[in-house]
Amino acid sequence: MSDYTQTLNSHVNKHRENGIFLDTNVLLLFIFALHQPSKIGFKRLEKYNREDGQLLVNFVSEFKRILTTPHVLAETSNLARQISKGEDGKKLASFLYPLFFNIAENSFVELNTIEISVDEKIFGKLGLTDSCIATLAKNRQLLLTDDLDLFLAALANNGHAINFTHMRVAAATI
Image (cartoon, rainbow, N blue to C red; front, side, top):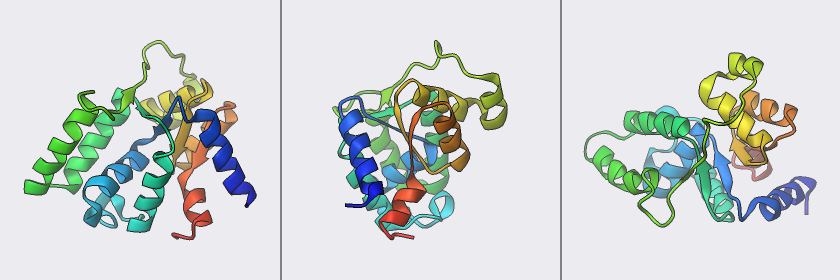
C-alpha cells in the first residue's frame, strides 16, 4: 500500500462519521458523475473524465454524509445550470432539489458559516466561499478540493484537506 493510499485511508477512518466537505468544483463533478456522466469533459467539467467522476463517487461513498455551505450550494447550482440546459436541466434540478433542501435521506448537510471567524488575509486571497471553507477545514472538517490555493490555505491553517488532483494522479486517471 502506498503512503498516499495510507493517508487517504487515515482520513476516511478519522472522518467517516462526521462526513466530507466537497468544494464547489468537486461537488459539481460528484453531481454529474451520479446523474449526468455524459456531461463530464465539457464546459465547467472539461478538465475531468468519467474515470475521475467514478473515483470521486467511490471515495465519497466511504463517508456517512457530504458537508457543504449555502455559498457552495449557490455556486454549484449556478454552474450546474450552465452545464445542463433544457430537458436535461429540468431533470438535474429535480435530482438536486431534495439534496439541496434537505428533503432526501442523503441530503447534503449545510454547515453554519455565520458564527465562524474567517481570517481577513484568507478572505482577501480566496474570497467569501473559499475563506469559509478553509476556516471550516481548520475546525476539523475534512475538505476535498481541486483548488490548490484553497488546499494550501487549509493546510496552512492546520486543517484537514485532500487535493483531488493528487488523488487523480495516484489513480492514474490523468
